[in-house]
Length: 216
Image (cartoon, rainbow, N blue to C red; front, side, top):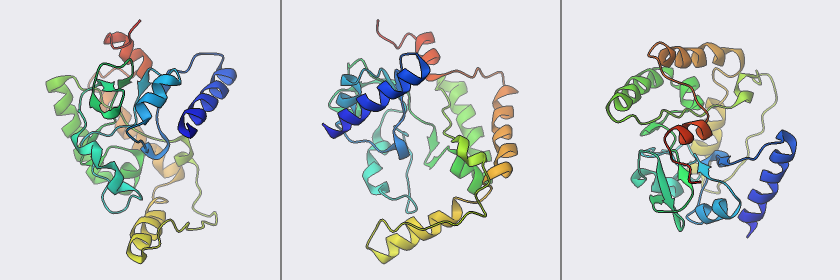
């Protein structure tokens, strides 16, 4: 009920601001439960992009062990099971998975491990050439803001000293690498790679419409 209330409230706020219906959703930190599908459907969402198929969150991510459902989730866009967002079903909710190659294809990887991202984009391009899977990259506008000189407080989320060191201390220090203006050329490199290969850049809504994934 709490999840449903938050989804309905935030959806209404966004629609009041934009003046348009909001039908696409991405969960903060990509945190989902098996109940998320039903909550999204009841809230009026028709598209989700919070499942990162075949992404392993490793030891640096808090709650990564709870995201193991990603490893068995379908890789291509699919209609979800209303009782389990990580499985195919016949519900009206469409999942367009974020791209991953075990390592997440996201801005954090791009900034912290740019060489890995170089390999990822080539692998993903090869996959798309084979099965037309859409490439979905996750980035946040605030990553282009230089926060390196701001005081950062490391929040302790685990009582386990090893987990605290890896998931809080190390992660906090890594996340500021290439933050701010330094992130722009890295992101431009990603855009240029796909633009040079005649990719089309679309919103999730437009993609699903083109592919006939949105039920009337």
